[in-house]
Structures are given as C-alpha cells and as structure tokens.
Length: 237
Ligand SMILES: C[S@@+](CC[C@H](N)C(=O)[O-])C[C@H]1O[C@@H](n2cnc3c(N)ncnc32)[C@H](O)[C@@H]1O
Image: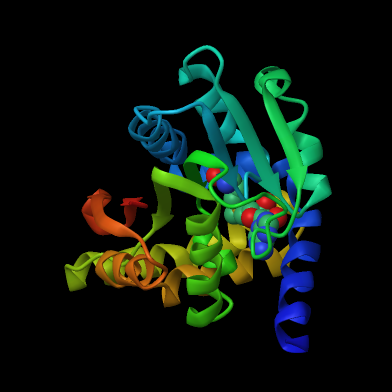
C-alpha cells in the first residue's frame, strides 16, 4: 500500500508542474486531434439518460466543458481530480460555472453507491494504471458510484494493431513527446512519463477485458487513427 501511495503522490506532484501549458502541449503533440477525440467521446456520452454526470480525472476540465455544452437542462456535472493546480485551470473555463469541481482521488470516491448516470474519463487511464489490480479497483469504484443502467465512456490512447503503424506511432512518441512536451512545459518528468506509459499500455481488447473484470457489461469500443486512440463504452446493469 505504501508503494501505491508513493506512486500516487508522485503522479499528483507531476501534474502540479504542468497545468499552465497542459492543453497547449496536447494540442501541439496531437496536431489538434485531442480536441476532436474529446468532442467525439462527449457526443457519445451525452446521449446518456439521467441528469447526474461525472468526469473523472478531469484535469483542466476540457471533457467536463464539452459535456456541459451538450447536457440537457437540469443536468448536474461533476469534474473530479486530485490535483488542485489542474482544477485551478479548469475553474478558469467559461463553462466552469456549470461544473462542480471536487478534489478527490478516484480510487476512493466520497460519493454514495449509485450516484451517477454517466461517468466519463479522458486520457487518464494510463495514469491510474499503477498496476492492473489498481486499474480494476478504480474501475470497480466507478461501477459502485454508477446507477444501474449507467454508462462509463473512456477515451484513451491505445495500441495500434498493424505492426508498421504501431512502430511509426511509437517512434513519433519517442522522438517528439518527451522533447516537445518538456520544452513547452518545462517538466521533463511529466513527458518522459507520458512517453513510457503510452508505449506500455493495453490494447483496446485488453482494456475492455479489464472493464469486464471490474463488473461492467456490454463493453464495446471504437478505434480511431488506426487504433492509436480508442473510445470504450461500458454499462452497469
Ligand atoms: C493526462 S491528465 C487528463 C486530464 C483530462 N481528463 C484530459 O482529457 O486532458 C490526467 C489527470 O488525472 C489526474 N489523476 C491521476 N490520477 C488520479 C487519481 N488517482 N485520482 C484523481 N485524479 C487523478 C491528474 O491529476 C490529471 O489531472
């Protein structure tokens, strides 16, 4: 447990170094595609029934802001993250008045069972994947706080299946993520970490299996950019 706490606080520290430039680095590294993918995931998510929505690991709040633009009137949206500096950026967004920001570790949420109709998470699964068991535990926590009939929509980088494209994708990450990310943000640690976690992450099928292990049903996924990114949907029945 002490090891998990140590890893958790080093991730928290890392994110406290990047908030001011976080969005800019993402837009540069993905050539703006991160915006397109978040919008796409938000559009899929916003078809949810029920008015209690939560964006986990919301960071600077881009996904929560997308949700708030699409949400039917009367929807309550939470943006949850353990990094106060990331949330400080999120609170500057024009949509922030419509979002309830909560400082919390997503591994132990201070919400009762069956609180939400919809949970989203974007580009954070790699960060909570301290080990496979912890990822299952985190997804189980999402399952607990979802209502029966509730949906989990997850956007994350993935592992392209075509080997040549996978090699090119990993080469791009090796050559540019660390150098460009560090130069713009001034944080070498954060972008070394990003580069290594993308490289080691699960395939879309493996991630779907992990969601099933956490209790989710009807897990499906769509892949984009030849499998470099995936949007998973999972239901609680
Ligand atoms: C790569 S950022 C993603 C932010 C945002 N969702 C996006 O689409 O850009 C990962 C975020 O997860 C948060 N995070 C990582 N582990 C967490 C945990 N265990 N509990 C709460 N937040 C966590 C970090 O503070 C950071 O803001």
